[in-house]
Length: 454
Ligand code: GLN
Image (tube, rainbow, N blue to C red):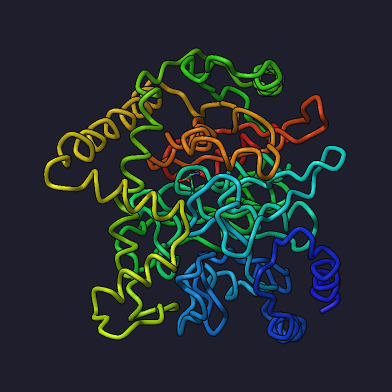
């Protein structure tokens, strides 16, 4: 109760960050009291957490930061948030994010921007996106950990921008049941925490087989925390040459070099590797993700959930769909739905969607090949820059925002686990992250390698 009260006070004092968007203090205190009274305490007993607004939480507003889900209070709890509650966690409330998790800056949210607790002078910075509220809340000590979701980098990029740790597990490790779908073949939930040990403990509680999600893996979950020995002697770390991007800032190159040194100092062996299809990852992602999104978002029709537009005389069902969707979705979401329906349309399916699926298979094979050559993990920068200013990218071409995901989307396309760990500060004193990519289902090893970077 004491810990929960402390977090609730911090949340009240940090309103300017706009991290929590639905607060549930009464529920939190009730859960905290139950935790104090519990004898068979789970691994997260009494630990106050924030939950991204993308997760359906029973009886608590779950809007995916969209107007179209205005007033939606699910009758059910997502499997991941239920697993956390079953481990004894306390839910403090729901966290800000980009609308339907589409974005890299938390600026597409119906609740307004979340703000990075790090700043340079008075310049307000993005906490990244789409899990921007989760990142800001953990970095500002409003909660001890938060859930995020990652379709193309939405856990790892905001973690890097706010100096915290975030892991996207292997596709299928966490159940997607009850998480509002963006791009179903890419979406994964994961923890956002202050350090690697917390990530191991929280991930352990979140994941596991769920018969309600047919893509959830029926595999044993190892004890991730027990695997944090810090011993990485003899491990082979791949350094992909294609990630040396043109125009990458010197400080990102320097950070990467520093990461390589830390791993070799800890006894790992570095090898130069090639992932030849890397340059196609962004265009592939920005065909596949909108295609799946356009299909998933077809369910928001003004009938089943949330918002319905006011109708005029003579308006029929078509007008209801049109007006509801026109009012309910923001600009970026509309852009994705339009791109998605275009690439799936009869005349363009083969040229775009089918081609993207084939390239995706090649991207996955690039990783399989290097893992088959004995590489245990791959080290890359997490982002091409530190956090940028709020509003600075909004007038730019949307593609400029998509370029932020250059180091993260390959991992989702290949279904692999990836982690971002804080790795230093840039010239302005802002946090930067390094990414480690692991073999499928080897989150334990990946966490342990990340632990050696801490
Ligand atoms: N920034 C990417 C996008 O806008 C990734 C989002 C995510 O991982 N949810 O699609």
